[in-house]
Length: 142
Image (cartoon, rainbow, N blue to C red; front, side, top):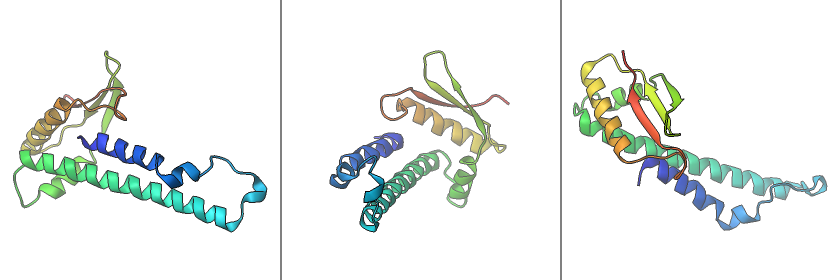
């Protein structure tokens, strides 16, 4: 299961929890007592925490994939964090999917490791929110 699928699955699981079903989308103004607000704040906090955990797990999964390609144990996590800061462009490709073109890193071995990692990610057939447009990651031409 890819990190994106895991995040989507975590959000879907939250939607079907008992508390989620009981939280109304709208409530009358006269019912906005402190107990209703406390329940809604708790639900909001639970949702935010689930997103944080899913994001953390996705980042760690990507870091492990990157480390398989970039095997220098001294600085791989620092390098990976800098890779997460790369600029890029998101475009719609000809098949209706999304193509993410990242600016290539300056160091050749980091560029090679990132290229191999992106190819590995692309082979997993990653999709936005499970069944939506296919995501393709590439390094932009210099």
